[in-house]
Image (cartoon, rainbow, N blue to C red):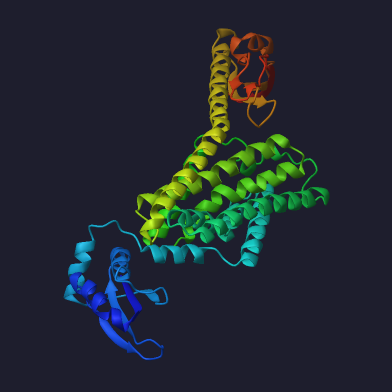
Amino acid sequence: MRLVEILIPKRKRDAVEEVLEEEDIDYTLTEEESRNEPSVVVTFPLPAPAVESVLDDVRETGIDEDSYTVIVEAETVISERFDELEQRYARNTARISREEMQAQAKELTPRFSTYLVMTIMSVVVATAGLLLDSPAVVVGSMVIAPLIGPALGASVGTVINDRALFRRGIRLQAIGLGVGVLTAAAFAFVVRTTGLVSPMIDLFAISEIQGRLRPDVLSLVIAIGAGVAGAWTLTAGTSAALVGVMIAAALVPPLGVVGIGIAWGLPKVTLAAGVLVLVNILTINVTSLGVLWYKGYRPENWFQQDEAAVATKKRAVVLAVAIVVLSGFLAGVSYDTYRAGAYEEGVTDDVAAVLDSPAYADLTLVDVAIEYTDPVPPRQPERVVVTIGHPIGTDPPPIGDELQSRESVRAESAIHLPTGPLVESNRAEVVVHYTEIER
């Protein structure tokens, strides 16, 4: 519930009282003598869903722009009329007023210096966490990232036609992404050149980095969830701290991987993580925009509503087209994941079938591992490593040639992704490792 306080000219008192009486709203009036023009302060409680419509009705009485309005959260209101008012507006969509949402969107974005410092520190911590393969450190970087404010601010500015808020949101998002990439690249380069990590480090063996190298269509779910949750939380007037962590989860770690790819001179890593960042930021923007429009937020002045509607549709279309284009890469990665899974399953089944032969009754399949030419999609199987157990004190029969002859070892023919054929057909090498086991 909210407590609303409005300063109005005394000559508008009767018109405002009429509006409040028609809504059965309890109110108090206080004479204000500190202004040149005789004024009155009107104070009244409202359920949160009623604030916007009641304020619009009050403003339609012709209140001048030099009047001010204060809206604060109220803990308890004891009044029969308020209870009836609350029940009446309970049927409306639960959301805070346009003015409150606008104020909260501005508050979520800190001062530029603070935003810059927190963005730099969050990316540095994320990059360190990635290189350390520490999920806890990566999560910590998300907590301090200030990225939720600009993302939601741009959407709020669009639907209510606040151009300053929209421009600020877009500008800060661009600065955040640019500074994030430069910071991650610089930090990773320093770490690499100063020997803070082993020169023999295998970046592709780090699970925290692997997860950002193969972004598939499911990656969109994270961004969609972050955008919807962020906008919904904002309109509900609840804390957006946890949602901010979710939005940061979609952006900060991939930014760190982009910087690592630049520092290590790995263009495919940079490209894969960069596409993930772009898809996530665009998806967060378009989904939050859709939620705010669905919730019914429009400009205060009716003659601005058409302009806001056109701007919202144009920006939504541009974002959607960009997402569709970038999603072609995600679709290719999804297909590569499916193809690799099917290949691994076929090879494993063929190896098991060979070992089921009576000639190899004493052998036990321990593991089948597939090594690829490149951990970044599109991947081509390069080596099949089969680990086989045999009884202690026996000499295992050689089965490498038989495994090599199996049809499943042949990789699929050229894969046609949106960018053209990227993988040529070949035959993966089979390597057999033997290990003694007790029967």
